[in-house]
Image 1: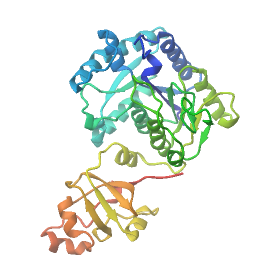
Image 2: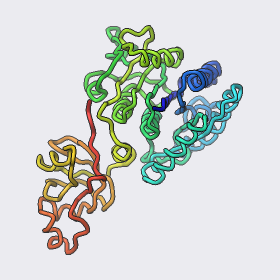
Image 3: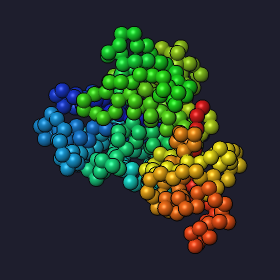
Image 4: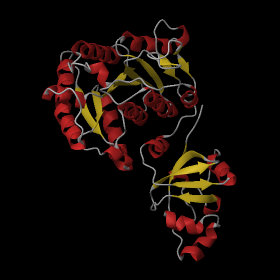
Amino acid sequence: MKKILVIKLGTSSLFNESTMDTKLSNMAQLVEMAVNLRKNMGYQVCFVSSGGIAAGLQQMGLKTRPKTVSGVQAMAAIGQCRLMGLWERLFSQLNQPVAQVLLTRTDIADRMQYCNARAALQEMLDMGVIPIVNENDTLTSREARFGDNDTLSAMVAAMIGATHLFLLTDVACLYSANPRLDDSAHAIRYVADANAIMREVSTAGGGSSVGTGGMTTKIIAATLATAAGCDMYITSSETLQTVAGALEDDEQNISPDNSQYLYTKFAANKNQLRDREIWLLHSLTSAGKIEVDNGAYNALTRRNRAGLLPAGVTKVEGHFHAEECVDIVHDGKIVGRCLVNYSSIELERIKGYHSNDILGLLGYADSEYVAFRDNLAFYRHT
């Protein structure tokens, strides 16, 4: 089995947020660490690197982000070139080839482009190249953004079948409360269920002024990565030896609670999602909701599940077209997603009816199913 490692680097790990100076020593240590992991520990390594906009601010002698969308996009274009140049020069000192990959949510919402991106990344890794991924902030609209590189890194990890994802940040691990505000906060070293910790841990505040990701976004990333079968770690970018230490702990079955290193491990879900399920649940934007009854939910979530029939649909929300993605709701909770065969207007007319009634209700019957089995995906818990 391949050992594939994704390392996400926040802006505050690469730039001083007060002076906007590059943390060159940090970057050099990150490069040495990545090359060591690849050459001496047998890992294929992929970086997800923030910092494009910060590099643009540095280049232009500015301290704060532009207030307009076009200003931020321009700054990202200026800075991404500078940032990638820094990475390339540092890695070249160790004869390590790298590649730039810029992604948007729109790119991977298209199934063919998603598969192309996955294949290209996997090919680079097999060639011994370290891909350096970032969101294409120059082209991305607010509506189509991943939102932060925590989410993007989890998506990349799921896409390429990574075994480990490390989020390097300005805190050492996950705490029960914000340690900057609450002296009673204690470290949480091991998380068996990322979904459960989302409800239990206070994550208010925290995060730097330059980057966009706080602790909440990291836990959201953990729910995605662990559902895809990837162990996720949070640790400090100031103690890079922790990355190799955590990997050695994993290989030697040492619990994070007993480790000499400080980090939080989110354990991979053993009942992991398939690739197409990952794409349906996390790459697409929902255009509406359909609520299903108990019988439909049980039929859809069993091992040999069926497709969704109109008889099981009780409510339709939103305005959407056929072949768009919608949320599936049961008992008041969003439990999954699907690509529908009928529009919201058509579903309003056929919901609750048997499939053999569709022709009489609509005058045509494109399918007996509201959604085919292969176009259904459900969120999973540990």
